[in-house]
Image (cartoon, rainbow, N blue to C red; front, side, top):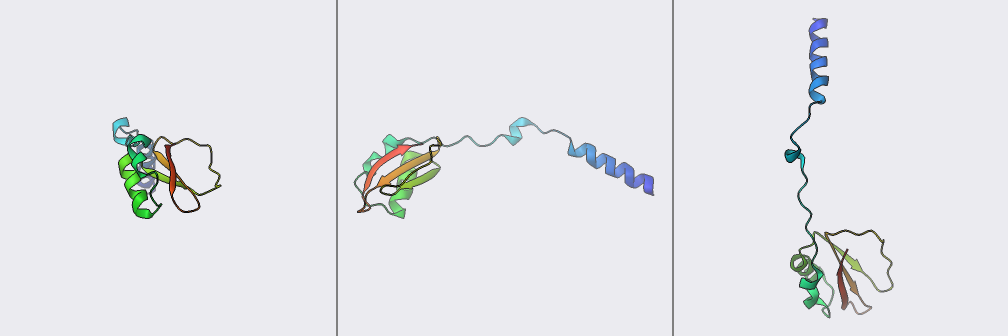
Length: 97
């Protein structure tokens, strides 16, 4: 009985080391941002609805709002659209990164 359990445990360890086809593990291709396609939103009032439209138009996966005088990290993400707005909540710029 004990020997049978040891064999099962060893088989489980070997199975845990098995590799899979790389194509099965491939992450989906990131959605690249195209800020030019969203420039029509500059001058509009920032809102969740406008943000959703900017995401759709730009093809980006993530949206980052930039408040007046706000600081951003310098990391670059090809799947992110950046939207800056002023004190009146008016969108002043749309870029990727």
